[in-house]
Amino acid sequence: MASRKMTFTLPDELASSFTKRIPARDRSRYVADAIADKLAEREKRLILACEIANQDPEVREIERNSTP
Image 1 (tube, one colour):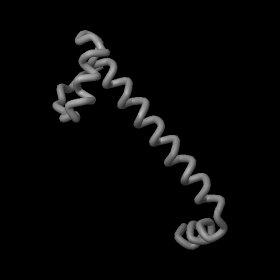
Image 2 (cartoon, rainbow, N blue to C red; image 1 turned 45 degrees about the vertical axis):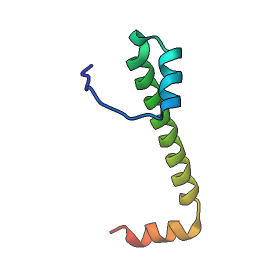
Image 3 (tube, one colour; image 1 turned 90 degrees about the vertical axis):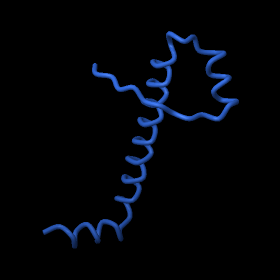
């Protein structure tokens, strides 16, 4: 898998806690996993919001009227 080096700014307290708790050799993987988990959770919430909206009769009507 290709990788890209990135730079982030973190609050001092968070950065300190991170460096104390996560060994240097594990930090990139830890951050990648955390970002992947957060993005997956955001995607799940978006899908749920769309499913809820699609159950609304007004939304269904808009969809019917906008489809060619």
